[in-house]
Length: 189
Image (cartoon, rainbow, N blue to C red; front, side):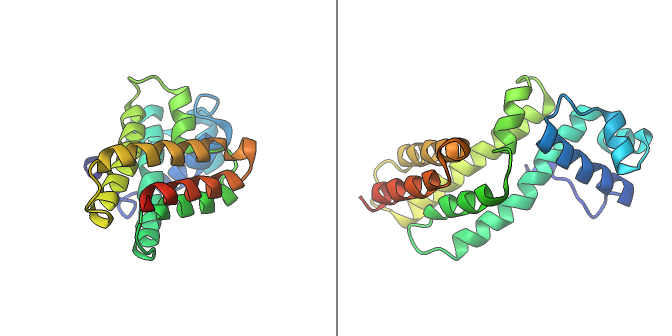
């Protein structure tokens, strides 16, 4: 995501407001139902400012998801730094904390359900999910150097983590705690 990072310091106050409003609307209402007229009206910023800074709605959707990643990733890294080995368990803690305040599930899975693979934001979704998997694999390799297949174990933890998060609203927050217990068993094996 480094090549597409939004430099919030370089956005004008109006562009920042558009991104904030659009982010809330896209998450709460979905991407397709929210139009640029609504975003402009609710942000009290003109559509030309939106187009100047984001190109079009597709560019704004991609910016929304990149910004969400850029905001969330340091939280994850701080949790990893504060967690004892095996640090991959920090993912379950962060997702469980997110589950307390997130009302509509994973923004990336929600967006993926609405967008085609050709949409510019779809690459952002894939990149975010890949970075989650990659970081899991890195931590497993670092913390458990005797593990013969860290990527395969990362696959399992990723599916467990994502599945527990995707279903926690259906089956309750305990699902993430249960997922963490299973992950701990796999990691400490």
